[in-house]
Image 1 (cartoon, rainbow, N blue to C red):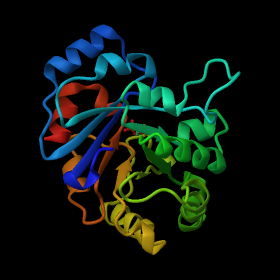
Image 2 (tube, rainbow, N blue to C red):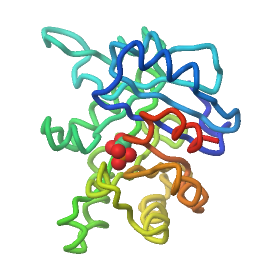
Image 3 (cartoon, rainbow, N blue to C red):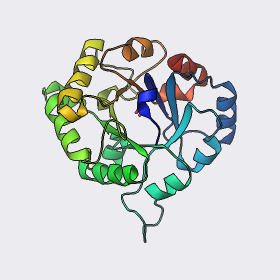
Image 4 (cartoon, rainbow, N blue to C red):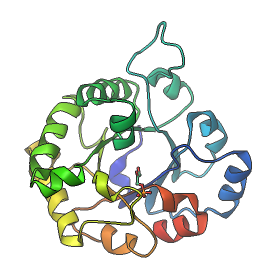
Length: 239
Ligand code: 13P
């Protein structure tokens, strides 16, 4: 398993349902990976094999995994299949999966457990909606998501947490820097065992705000959607 302690920051590109072979080729020709950071590209699973390169600081991740280990589940991709393909990371519980595919905290927990068993690092995504934020429910929602989504076998060495406020995803809106730092501190202090977790921020990260976000004391990197599709923009973010 990758030693997360080796890296000062972690940057994850979440390409979502975007990309094709020519996009990938051009992206890789221009991508400049920084050796201090761990950079992870999460493409659609069908492209993951072509993404694997020789750069030791560049990793690839899946965007989802099956709840099931094997069996009659047409269309699914298991954690052991990801391991078989040398995939080291996998997003779980992204708000788009929770929203459009009815993924529950319990599903996220099972998926994370299956991934950890296969030595794949789950990137466990949590975050509140705008309505929840406006009703001052952020803390409660995040605590429930953490309690119910993170399996007991998770540690700061085999799992990552990504805080992505749902209202900040793809909107150009972000919490203030103070808010981001406070929420990350809250997550790490929720229980003693989370103190050393690396917690990434996601939601409208771009080259113009990534530096100040990454420099926050309780932020250990970023999960980037739209801006990660533009390689020049992503190069600036990870530089
Ligand atoms: P944007 O960076 O496009 O807001 O998306 C964030 C995200 O969902 C990353 O997982």
